[in-house]
Image (cartoon, rainbow, N blue to C red; front, side, top):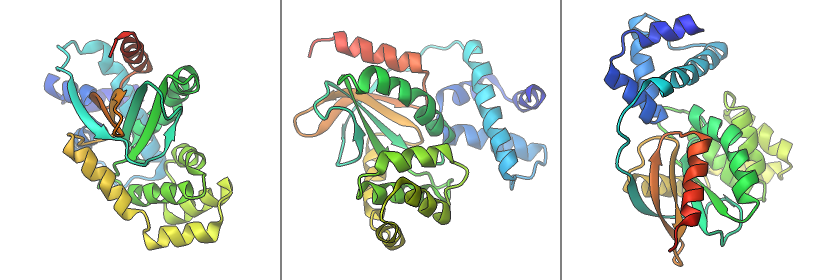
Length: 261
């Protein structure tokens, strides 16, 4: 695996390193596809090859993290609605984390399966943090739109987080049949669920999330807004484009707790 990573990294210049490190999944996948094309690699890879590429991407990030030293960008602050989207935690929590996410995004999966559980234990269940999930399916992911709609259909039956976790645990299988299987596994009324999904009941809701994200500068996934809530259902917070380490999330939350309004 290290030899593959080295081969992919060799042609890239320092600027490409920076874009990989700081960018979103869309930026990174674009660069990887260019490099793979130069080696005449067939991009219609099998499931095994897709998993190998995911490992390569994550290994590249691990290699680049200690190598790149650059001045951090100036923080960007935005105001965004939390809409009526699914959330974890106390609705009156003093700090809110909104994620614009994509069920087929590999960095979103990494956040969902490794970082979110830590934040849940330390901040969400203790009433400090409210976490809101908003959909931002990318065009490059053919099944992401329907996966988002499926989760909303399960939300109708109070099974949102159950199917959310199942989808991220089985990210390589999110076709319509698989989504229906996951819904049945979490215990929804499958006939109602399938009708909801077939009719595209929540297509407009997903579009609303996308529009809200684009208005504040979201261009890839994951993108986070961490801030404090307003009485009108919006939050003022810092926009964080791309995945960041668990330690940075915790540091930002702790710092925010110490600040007075």
